[in-house]
Amino acid sequence: MKAVLLTAHGGPEMLRYGDAPDPVAGPGEIVVDVHAASVNAADYKVRLGGGAYSGASQLKFPYILGRDFSGLVGALGPGVTDLAVGDAVFGVMDAGIEGCYAEKIKIKADIVAKKPARLGHAEAAAMALTSLTAIWALEDTARLKRGETILIQGGAGGVAGFAIQLGKHIGATVVTTASARNHDYVRKLGADRVIDYNTQDFTAAVSDCDVVFDTVGGDVQVRSYKVLKPGGRLVWIAPAPAGFQPPRSDVEVLRPRVARDRAHLERMKELLAAGAVWPPAITRYPLAEAAEAHRLSEGRHLQGKLVLIVR
Image (cartoon, rainbow, N blue to C red; front, side, top):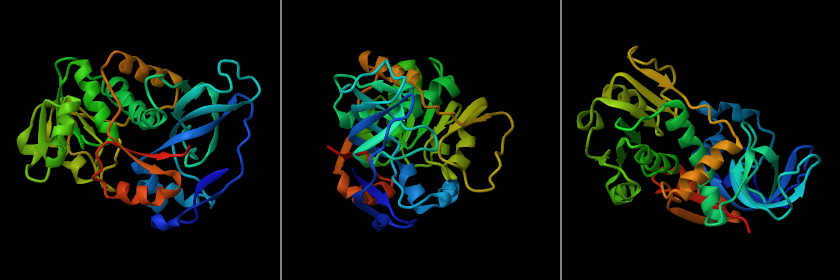
């Protein structure tokens, strides 16, 4: 099969389009013929091999990146009875396993879901990990309630954009940060208030939040403590600076577990069917141009999601 191979840690030029062995489904697994694969910020961090992703230093090269996908079932392993060859499915690779920048993957059958008919493969891939993460963060971890106020950091990103929609569906007041060029986009997603992080200090613009959902990390997380009310919850998926210690003991600091399971993908499908969420803005690249997609991703100013078109 064709795949994008990470040949060593470094810049996007370390990604090479080439050949890799076809995967074979074991017991309880399926092989998926990938049609689209999502590009996530974690991908370029693994490629660089540092910081919170220092475990990437243990990678065996060549290595295939990619965590979420959409495609067709190409083969069934022993014991798989709830899917059939030809079924359209989408999902997220199990924790610690990657490989979606390729024409084929193998994955546990019980952590994929059938693709909603109303979504194309690019849209399903774009919503897989973003929806899984946002649902775990807001519903399972923050336990966001109707009438509460949530500040979502970095609203134009894939996970944050889904979280804006989910927060509005729950009935919360949603405040988000975004650059001026993305204000219309995040308002269309449902944001009640938008703070321009280039011209405004969010700590002066908002206060008494019940929840902060931080998708940015670094200094943004450090300053986010200032806007939480006592008893508030800070939920993060991007890390604070190394060695940082939370300055307040009267708030909860939570990291979503983001387990891979069919139930949360089915929850996304329920939200989609109810009209509560819809696919993000998508920028498409052919699989062979994954290096260019990484250059855009690493700039961290993308609206919505990057998706590699495989077939």
